[in-house]
Amino acid sequence: MPGATQLASPNRLLDALPRKEFRTLLELLEPVKLAFGEILYESHAKIRHVYFPNDCFVSMLTTVDGGRAAEVGLIGSEGMIGVPMALGVAVSPFRAVVQGGGMALRLKTGAFRRKFSESTALKREVFLFTHLLMIQIAQTAACNRFHIVTQRMARWMLMTCDRVNSDEFRITQEFLALMLGVRRVGVSAAMSRLRERELIAYRRGTVTILDREGLVAVACGCYKTVKDAYIKAQTRDGDS
Amino acid sequence: MPGATQLASPNRLLDALPRKEFRTLLELLEPVKLAFGEILYESHAKIRHVYFPNDCFVSMLTTVDGGRAAEVGLIGSEGMIGVPMALGVAVSPFRAVVQGGGMALRLKTGAFRRKFSESTALKREVFLFTHLLMIQIAQTAACNRFHIVTQRMARWMLMTCDRVNSDEFRITQEFLALMLGVRRVGVSAAMSRLRERELIAYRRGTVTILDREGLVAVACGCYKTVKDAYIKAQTRDGDS
DNA sequence: ATTTGATTGTTCGGTATCGAACACAATTGC
DNA sequence: GCAATTGTGTTCGATACCGAACAATCAAAT
Image (cartoon, rainbow over all chains, first blue to last red; front, top):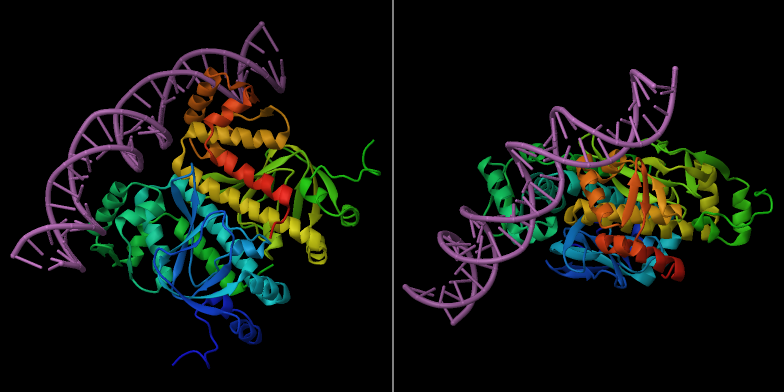
């Protein structure tokens, strides 16, 4: 039975904290199960909790023209949902949608604000993640400009794969089209092309990555660019 | 002769600081003239100074595939160049290019780090700007996905116009194409369309906005979305 | 087993943008 | 004044994606 004696968190951001700080923080953290499709923040809505994903992951979406939305960021156990809180803003500019269900630890905004101002280590980790998220969003901007659906889809699959720790995950073409901001037709064509090359397999809402290296080759360099930034930050941790 | 007795800064971020903090900061700030095309940071390079633009403005660019670049953010007197420093990172993930020449106040990274950790007000202002920059970048990501060249170009012109405090600014089609990540042909076509409708006038590197309202109507909603966020932040200042 | 709903596959004509290339016009330097 | 440089306008065929619509398939519920 896990819980009482468990010291390490499956959330890598929290895990980077000194053990002592982590333990005091843990008392305030509330474990919650997040279901696929759940909306953590609506755009322009007040932030009530910050979330530290364990095995779930969350899409950040920006809307244009009051309707269509595009994913600008994907956050899993390497980060936190609610970055604006760290910047002194309690309103989320993005919609946050649970992309893969699972567990997360959450903290009420008030408690977060308090702990955040007290803990140098928490600040360091959260700000570092904020920096990485910014890189991810910016790369997405350039990626949206230059790369074709197949490349961007491959990138999305790799990013997702990294966050579920499995070669298999559930996603429908319809939903993937929404994330990428394209028609389902485009996703359908791109996916069957990847299947032909035996890079992936899929059937009705489940995608399996067969050849990770091959998929990386098909994806645009944006995948590697962002991933390298994350890796670099984790190893050097802070740089400054 | 300006300088000695001048208390207000033409940089709105600094101007929002309490007078006392502003004065102590001013002693460390070094006025510099930034020329068009000057590169403040190369991507992945160490940040040596942070810049507070007065009447100049700067583009943040992200590269893909080791070559092509696209603009992800535009910063003028409302902000600061060197946001990563506020997040504890002294390396710029973006290239920062001076888009419109003019004056700026700059601060060595060491001095900035010191002042930043001391001043609650400076932290508040810089973090708020960081938040706004993030919104701008994310909106650019969605904009790149959904909107056509004409709309994005109109948005760019309006954003630029807001930062130069003039209806006229210097920009060549070639350069504008680089910023938008499209061919010059596309910019050429889009510009002549706007000229036909008498929204703008231009000749060899100089664009004049004739009908601001009309241009806003042509531009995508991304312009208004981002601008509203900036205005809201300035009036409520912090919210939280 | 049959129906129902969800998921995937395919087609159509039309538009935006691409890469490459060339012609022309305005400014600058000599 | 003339040449060189820079900036702008236009063309070509090709490709990626659009909106709309319809067909086929699978999975679960009755």
